[in-house]
Length: 104
Image (cartoon, rainbow, N blue to C red):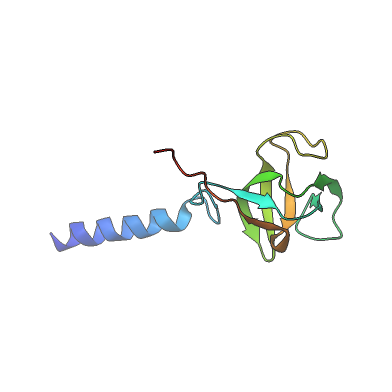
């Protein structure tokens, strides 16, 4: 009996450890750009720009690396980047998006 409980506990810990990491999908409302910022090919100001995120552009955070988020555009950006474009943006240029309150 103890072996079964221990095995179940270890399995749960292992699954938690190998689950896709650093995802922000637990924030169901996503993030938005707070100002115009380059969407980079990697987590550094020295990496190439894919284009610009404009203030209010909605993104989903996929993962993080240091002070950067890897994001995916939720819809076409105000600067013309296509929906689902992926890239890196500094964390300080993004903020959690306010969730809409349900009616009623």
